[in-house]
Length: 392
Image (tube, rainbow, N blue to C red; front, side, top):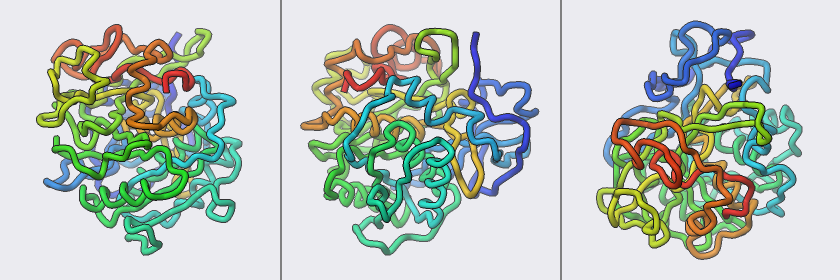
């Protein structure tokens, strides 16, 4: 019997977020009857970034008028305990390793909102004062850029998901001045220089670009979201040779021993790079991209309707998904594993039996393996989702 993680129609209101746009991929995951008529996912950032710019990839559940739903009930949807149970992460420790989050713009409410999420989910405090949380601008200082409501919600999702998957991880947020590859790339370089950083999460994308040095840092797991528009032919930086591309699943509770099962989320991005060579470890699987890099490598929860995380934002809880949800989770799992030497994307390809293989669902009409799941690697979900950290 399926049980969906869905926002209740009770005690809901609206929170203003700029740049909302309806998004079709999540429409196949129909909301439960009690969620209210017309409930659907919306983008929280601009849908079509200009050349050289990127967009965040968070999707939030909204009412029929496109207003993001907020609730005072923190545990209606997917929560921190669900994340750890569904992916066999309970009891694991990072021993204080740091996960870096790269986003555009400032977020003055970040520390307060993070405190709200962690308190509601019975997680220890993560603050600047106790050394768990650190926020820098793209140059490594404290000249933070102005807030942006859409990217604020993206940042809330990112830090909340790292907290959920890895409660003892330290969190570094590096804020780019603007959503451009130049600014966010500088932020990645800044993050890579910080002591203790073992993983860097990038929940944004734009175009299908060529490899950039920003995303090439040996010894650090650099993850990036594959996008929320289904099969599109690839999205950068997920299509960079040196990046661990993270697709997405729909997650359902069931009566199995695991307690959950997953299918392809129809919005999960997939495709082939137009210019970047596949890393050597990916050439051992059939991707149909030839010698070019294919997305995804791995996946995690991304369907905002079924597995969307209950994020604490501006004093309320909001159900948020997209591959913006899965990229920080995979970064946190790498931090839990402690294995990030060399190019850490190679480890899951050598340890596939320790992943949950997603074998049902599709994100387009191009067939297997780029659009349709089956045994082994597929475009929407890569090799699968974490089953503990033995694959990492």
